[in-house]
Image (tube, rainbow, N blue to C red):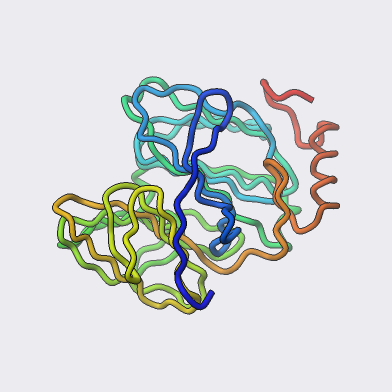
Amino acid sequence: MKHSLKITAHSAKVGADLVVLRGLPNSQFESIGPFVFLDHFGPMPHFTGGPGAHPHAGIEVITWLFEGANEHRDSLGNQCAVTSGGAQWLKSGRGALHAETFLSSAPITHGLQLWTRMSLKTQEDAPDYRGFQAEQIPDWSDECAHYRLLIGQMGAQTGPLVLSIEGLALRVTLTAGAHVKIPVNGAHQLGMYGLSGAVRSEGQEIGRADLMRFADGTTVIELRNEAQESADVVILGGLPAPQPLVFHGPFVFESRERIEQAMHDYSNGSMGQLEGVPF
């Protein structure tokens, strides 16, 4: 892309009782670096439940929990709860089942679910899982902002989650009136999603639910918070996802044939079993 492009996330229903803001994919661009899916949930008071048990293949599934408590379980036998500031990660590879449940013990639930495409060399790997608590995710502050780095490299800081395709996921909370310049990798496709408040960048205002994809070759992201309240954004991206991208429900691959194989593997039980998943 030669110029930055902004869209606004639309409402989408997930399961029976969860309404989210969906930024990726959209009618203007399918991906930002390896990221092919972005759902923003909350803030929601005293929310419990979730979309229920379901399969994935061809992607890495990340739930970054800003507030709340979330429990993961999967067909590999893993079960783990994370709380505010933590993240769940499932490398689905050739196929796995999982379920995530937001726990009623939390007064507020808020976060992002992100999918990243796996490289063609790794998409047939065995599935894997890790949970990250808040204290495992680097965070630091300066006079203008507070930073939290889940994925990638930022100066001396390294995020704990390593994707199969090189990526970046950085949350930036700017103080009122702040102006920051963030150096980034010019080989990455990069974007920014607004969580709260509003910032100005590339001559545009990015507020809650706005998603900007920056021009290719961007090496510095400049953010201005001109309001008298804080603003919260997530910068994400990385090396490009392999093309083409073929979506079918919870599966993303490079061809319809590989999607059909994933559907067959799910229906015959090759992705394992998990309570609550029909076959």
